Length: 307
Figure: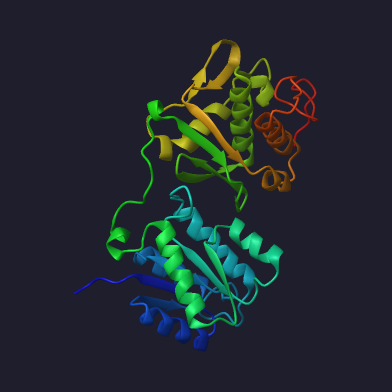
C-alpha cells in the first residue's frame, strides 16, 4: 500500500477543520486534527508529520473557552525551535498558516518572520489550499512522501568547500535566525553581536579584539566559546574561529560572508547590532567605512555603553 503524506491540522473551528480534511483527502493526504496548542504539541512529539496547517486563533488547551492569535503564534515558534533544518530556500518542515488574521501586509510579514512557509487567508477555496500545499512540499524537497523519511536536505560542511554564514534575521522569541551553509539556528542577542563583530572583521581582512566585543583588559572573554557551542550542532568538530595572541579572533579563511537582513536586524532595537549590520551593508556595497574598531555611530570599547 502506497504511503501518503500526513498533515497536522491545528484548527479551532470544527467546520473549517472538516473542510481542510476533505481537501487533504482530495490530494491523497492523511491528517491528524487538533484544536489547541497543548494537543498540538503532544501530537507533534508523538508522531512525525510531513507538514502543518495552522490556524492562528486557537485555544491554549482543550478546556480553554476562547482561542487567541498569540497561541497560534506561540505554537509556530515552538515548531521552529524544534525543526530548524533549512535547505537554503525554505524549512524542511513546511508550516502553512490558514487564518483570517493575516490579511494585512504587516501581519503576514510578521508571521513569515516567525517561520511560516506560506499564508493562506480565510475564506479560502480548495484549489488555493491544495496548490499551496503542493508548492510547499516541492520547495522543501518533500514532493514524494518517501523523501519525508530521509534526513533533512542539508549540506555537510567542509572547510575546503567554504562555509557560508548569512543572517536572514527572523526573530524566534528573543533569538535571531542565522544560517550556516543550508542549515539554520537561532542566536541570542549577545552571541549575535559576537558573530557580527567577526563578520565585519572578516570583511576587513583583520582580527577583532575581545575588547571590541565587550571584554575588559583584565578578564577573559567567554563570548567566543559560547558562540562555538551555539554553532556546534551544525559545524560538529569543524572550528571556523581562529584564536590569535592578545585576545584577537578571526574567522578561518574558508568562511564566506553571505546576505545580512539589515532592516530586520535594526528592528531588534539594539544599538550595537544595528551599527554592525549597517557596517556590513556598507562593506558589501563598497561604500566608505569608518574604521575605529568595528564600531559605526556607537562608542568604542573604552566608553561603550550596554545596548
